[in-house]
Image (cartoon, rainbow, N blue to C red; front, side):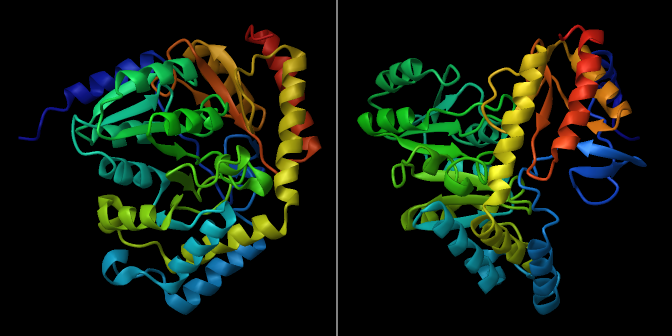
Length: 393
């Protein structure tokens, strides 16, 4: 007799009653600023594709050429026989771009966090100090450790300092923070965190997945944004957002790379990325260096769109990056706004509990360098009409 799954149905019904079910729409074709979703033309405002590189000809052509030359896969984990020259070329390109000594590429940003964090501490004599709004992949990585744990209020440097003082006797102290917080679009004060870490002899791991290609000169990330090169031990990033491909990044010293390579189970036990992906990773970095206009257009679109929303009276929360949330409060309101936008040909997903607090649901919009002013103006006209209907303005 099969196992009893009635508990699963009960959980499903509970989520449905609370407007908390995820029901992903289907993308039919490439993820472009104007794409096709479920049979209709749609303006995409829910992609992490900040620089519109997923369809860039140089990135696509590099992937095709490498697949034809090397095959569809690597045939092994990288630690044994799956490391190709393409993987090493991509890592050297990342390190040079970010101004780091070295880089290691994981299968995803998630596997970088859950694979690396447990290797940096050993037991309760060590402490992990984490921002209250850190990404779920950081939380999962922390849960895999036996270290003591402390949480400081979001971006509260006074509380971080107090926690560091409370754990002054810990053998190892590891501060972990997102660089750009993915739900609110605000930025960690990494310069202040570095100062406190150095004062209290702590290591820093910053998750810059939403800052890669966005912050810093030409998109070099949060370490460049605050000019703290060489003072952050572990910089985690992602190819699957602004860089338009797929994969996770760890950038830091040669010693940090060697440590991650030899101890991260998620790296050691995962098949290496297909040759086409590795070639596309390097090509994306090359495009970002050679064509800085993508980065410039991203920030122009961000400033215009957020400013227009605010002038209408919408609450965009803490946003200071291309992540521009429209704060809604109840999950039902966020779901209603997202649904109404979808009916108008605009994809902007509702972000509800448990990804955010129950009373802090929002529709999260994300800017892209590929969006035109006409695209943005079309969305703004829709928002101006829907806002009063839903009590948002």
